[in-house]
Length: 347
Image (cartoon, rainbow, N blue to C red; front, side, top):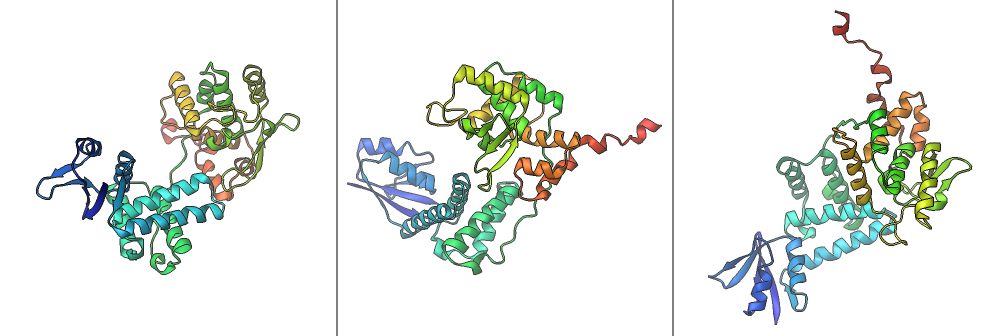
């Protein structure tokens, strides 16, 4: 027997021949309710719920009685394929596909029937109802534009789609004293070495986890960052103090390929694990600021600027494509602002 899915507005209509086992399974879906009049189960429509139903009825045939779902599935697969062919990073590809899935889920119909007004309605929903940041919505716009221009070849639909104005948010910066407290808070040599490298070289979390042993150049005191953001290779500075931490780490852990291996020796540590390490360090160091590990990179750049390093060199060390991106640190540096005396102190 089959499990048949139909669509009725905001609901999936799930019908099947009665059995205690099937009823027990459908009860695993959140929001489901029994429609006694029509003798069917009603489930809130979403791609996640369709996936859930397929999972719980994995040993039975699940029939989707709405054509556009299959059509959209094919389009998403094409999108994933094109992102890969164009050389987008896996992280960016995953973000784009996630945005496209959410967009499809919101519209509840075939992509081929979507018009410019539907896209605008979705973007307003993200801004007004979900209260999401302009940065998130801009990401959604980029993903939707990729879908319509590159995959569907329908440039006319998105030609007048506006982007929310970019928010001018300043990065959170830790003081040098706060950084020292964080770095010295951890007893675990591996965890401490990771944080020393992130701060001393201005690394992104995705870059530090992918470091290989041969990326550390002791002779030239450089770290090679392979295929960082934008698929660019670059070199950044290797601190002498960080090198001492690396040497101690080598003695204790004897890494082979990956400098920081994960649970399995042939895999590297995950971003999530490093984020947790940083949060633990902040807690132990009693840091009150709401900071993430990326703020160690911001602090690296700001502290260099305050010590007189030319902005162009900082741009190169960080791997920024545009100098405008690096210039944001001039707004958080205390180098010049600290020289200004408050009028209160003159009274």
